[in-house]
Image (cartoon, rainbow, N blue to C red; front, top):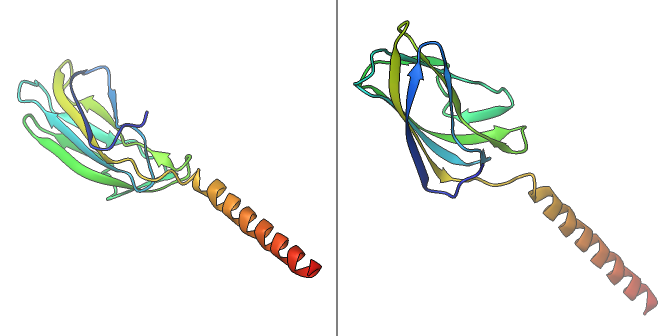
Length: 149
């Protein structure tokens, strides 16, 4: 699901001890920019662990941390740019969120802002191929006309 640039979305989510939750941003194209914000609300009775779900076919800058913990009241906020993708020229940012303390819950506020959708590089080659075809065809017609004179 692609969103318009500068579209902000935020939701409050309760994470239970026995059920991890996948937090994802929408997909953007290469050079797309996404701001991610995760806040563990102070009303939570446990800290949380966030694990970046790495897909080696997608490269973000900066590189997302593999695994980190948030204590009650703490936030994580980072702006990412999609550097490259071998998955249709697009990617999203997924974090797996888990409660650390057994039989507890945690309430988080997960938000993201698509600052730039990026460029759909998959469509670009067809335009370039069409342009090359047009130039070659034109030059062949010009040569044909000059031969007849």
